[in-house]
Length: 357
Ligand code: NAD
Ligand code: IPM
Ligand code: MN
Image: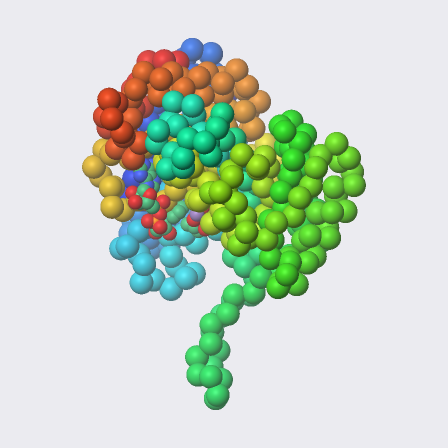
């Protein structure tokens, strides 16, 4: 089969980790007789530098025409002083919005081989951790009205509005229940319904949707408690469904339980098979250009692409199995390193994964 993949390497470690994911996909293509066509596109800080805008029209058009999008990371200190609308991160937000990719799946799975890299005590980790964060991705405070105004009494004021419509909550809740149905049948909806009006609506709509899924258990939890429970007893969670910003924060927290933020992939999905796949981490300016970044989150994102956009389940599994084998063999990038392990670079990690496909 032929697949057109739009590739956005982006900034910082983006190009380094993307290269490894492309090589892995090429290996899969050869082994299973698929033709993956990669089209590298500009977006983020590098696009600002080259063409003066973070998301050139051409990039957006070609993304829309592709079968799926693979993205590294965007942003970095060089562009931090730009106004919000012009920042590299805006490219990501626009892509998500324009392609209506409202459901962001962020699986936090602790590979058994990485138990020692998990900062939690062994008795807390037990037999392992397997959580799927379902983050709403095109609404909430990220996309509400924002701006500045000045008041005679208070001086300058900045605001960002958090709002959710019933239909936005319904569609993300349905996705969470569907996913839970294929897992341990438990949904924890995380909100701040003791304070926020948008969370009160969130809670009632999630409850309404739960009626259609009688075999799934629903719990509600406030975000402050959830942040604490994730560390105290992560095994209590199966699927976590939450708003855009809470999901952003909780998924970074969940990632470190898996050993490193460099392990967490994501899929951003909408109503068609066109999805965007990216690691949850950023451009890691502190290690960029050093061949040190962990490419596994990006490689696992490529596996999610095969599964969710192309329905290539055994090929996706082959990537995930190869990652497991390499971890078993003891290869570790610096973010995962502990005693008696084989320290490898970004490139070497990619090569080892390819060898095991
Ligand atoms: P970050 O995720 O880039 O880095 C946080 C820490 O994790 C750093 O110490 C970094 O070295 C480490 N880290 C991240 N990915 C790693 C990997 N693959 N291997 C090893 N270590 C890794 O978060 P930040 O520092 O807050 O943000 C840096 C820039 O990235 C900012 O401009 C931010 O806006 C942007 N960002 C982009 C995305 C994205 O493109 N999806 C996501 C998050 C942040
Ligand atoms: C992420 C990132 C983005 C977000 C930023 C870069 C806009 O942190 O993908 O998790 O907040 O969604
Ligand atoms: Mn984030």
